[in-house]
Image (tube, rainbow, N blue to C red; front, side):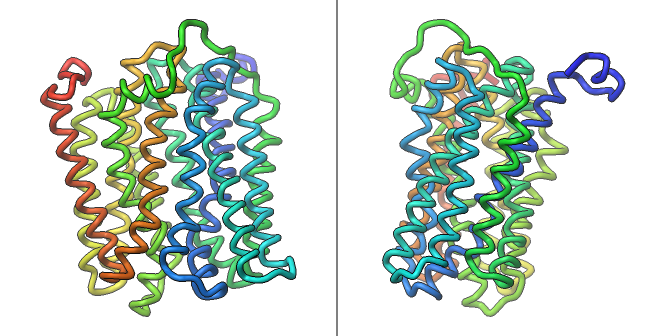
Length: 401
């Protein structure tokens, strides 16, 4: 797009491109948000499986992302972002199609579950390609000095989409079953691919590239902070619907909206703070807020307290990834930047992938509120590591702030 048009609209041309691409992320993440409040209900109530399988049906998506973040990052660094992003969008659309087939095909419950799990794996692979590709595409468009804006906008698109799509998915499920919800989860990413296709690609930066494991060794400290904060969100995503159902509370679909809405609002008003205040101080405040939210969910006597806890968790989680992402971008050369951000994302995926089945075991033994106590404990561990980072005790030092 030309600079004259950008000047007429009052926006930097590069930021206009980033806005277009983040809107595509918003559309694609409907494939994540639509199934999130209904999949656990379908697997538990319709197919008749227990809490461990429920947790696995949610968490297996993140197993795929864990295994493919490094591959996606290295491909972006080596070959550019656009083909990786488009492939991710197509895989997200395929995951929605799997939900349609799982309900409509005349097969038994075990085959239905297998189709759902396959679709979840496709969604995890697609999300991995999409997010890492978008980080590289957008940062390459605006420059590393504005990486905090990119990470904040991308996160707003992701979690804002989940906040909007979760109640939509619940409504579609009640109106037309899993197939209707799956159809919507297929259409939105396909539309995103159409919108993103005309955007010009970014050339891959040159220079030596280390192995993914070597990169992980360089960024494990901020990655661990991101991983530990992710447990709170994963606990909400895996079991909040069943927790509400057990308590006979209304507002099941609103819990994820409260999380996502608070997440987005904090990104809007505080997205600049990692660059201005420093990434580690922002992470310390954020983890403290998440801790309060998880404790509220654990002890909630009524639905509105649980919804408040979900909102506080969303507010707390909002700025942790951008903060640690800015820290990592400042410490990595351009030719491994997407791989490094992919590594940070992989730490978050570990939390998302393991929390579902582990929380299922905890819920079976101690009840659904106990999974939020687990999230609170992880927030405390995250705070401990962040304090060590602030003091320079893990090799990053105060100069990195």
